[in-house]
Amino acid sequence: MPKDPAESADVEVLARRIAVRHVSEGLRAADLPGEVSLSVDGGDVILKGLSARQMDVLADRLYPSLLPVVQELREALKVHKIRVAPRIAFGLIHLGDLCIPDVDTLAQALGASVPPTPEREYYPDWHVAQEACTRLKVASESAIGFPLLGDLAPYCDRCRQVVTMELLPLGGDEARRLAAALTGGSNPAHGDA
Image 1 (cartoon, one colour):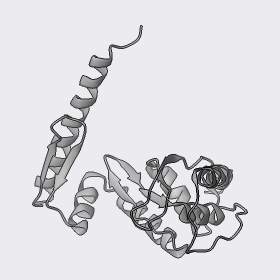
Image 2 (cartoon, rainbow, N blue to C red; image 1 turned 90 degrees about the horizontal axis):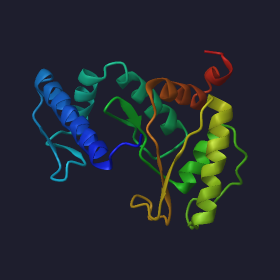
Image 3 (spheres, rainbow, N blue to C red; image 1 turned 120 degrees about the horizontal axis):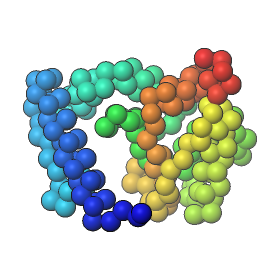
Image 4 (cartoon, one colour; image 1 turned 45 degrees about the vertical axis):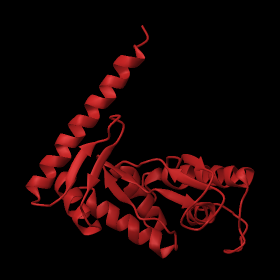
């Protein structure tokens, strides 16, 4: 029997309220300033008043096993000059938005054959962006055993590109495999880990 959409929305708001309580407890336990609340429509958890370092301390307190994975992933991405800063939110690792040139770079780092593109003057249209995302999906499936997927958006604020890809969040094991593949470690997709 299909669920009532209103009931589904209520469950989502309840889950967000529980997340607010969980993060509030983490702030108190870590003795951090800051304020956490739910947006007026109940759609977003809002966290205010914390620096990036304090966010790491909070993440460490809430998800201690994920912070080293995030740090490994940051370093691995930095080696390949991929401009994104992984962060922890609600038990998942978020890579955030990637410019399409960075999508190509990540795909290449995972073994895709991607023609080199000029760093400047590379303003892909939607079709080119979709092709880059497909290359990343195929390369990541082959290299780490799962596809890196995401949603395309029409504009990237960081590099003023026409299109950007927001990668879907990763679990800890997935992020660990990605970091290992980017640093030339064993291939967890093929049982080497």
